[in-house]
Structures are given as structure tokens and as C-alpha cells.
Length: 125
Image (cartoon, rainbow, N blue to C red; front, side, top):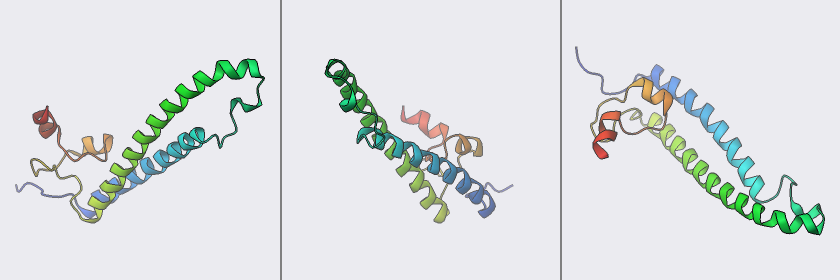
């Protein structure tokens, strides 16, 4: 039996749905993080008494730094998902960029933006 070189259009459509679902959630999470960074959610120390303000400023700075890192990471995840959608359009989705073989469906369902098979990923370590 001949080995498949790409996923069928029906299979690609299944992956597109998985990616679109993850993308919508990721974008919602990113907006929440971004709003937290810019204080658009209204939870700030400006309305508290001066005594609490001094104590909370240090914690707020740490929280903003962490939120900034999380937002950057979330944006990178969104970009990876968007790139996966482009690969679906090009019908190259699910093909390992190192081995040229199909990445197993189970891996793609778990990590839909994967570009390496487990075999290739382990070789890179």
C-alpha cells in the first residue's frame, strides 16, 4: 500500500475547525491579558487609599511584567495557529518539515500547529 503524502480535504477541514476553535479562545485570552496590562478592566490601585497603594504598586508591577510575558507568548501561539491555517490552504498541513512524512493525527489534534513529527523533534534535541 502506498504511503499517504498529504491529508485529504475532509481531514484538513477537521483540522481547520480544531485550529479555528483554538484560535478564537487564544485571541480571547490575549485580549484579556492585554486589557489587564492597559488597565482597561478598571482594576487598578488608583481608587485605593494611599497606604494600600504603596504596598500594591510592587505587586502590580510584577503582575504586569508577568502578564506582558504571557501576552507575548499568547501572541506567538496565535501566529503559529494562523500559520497552520495557511498550511491547510496550501495543502501542506500535517507534513513534517524535517522528514517529509505525515505527522500522526493524534499529535495534530493535541498540537494543531505542529510542524515536526515526534521522531524529528526527538532528533533535534
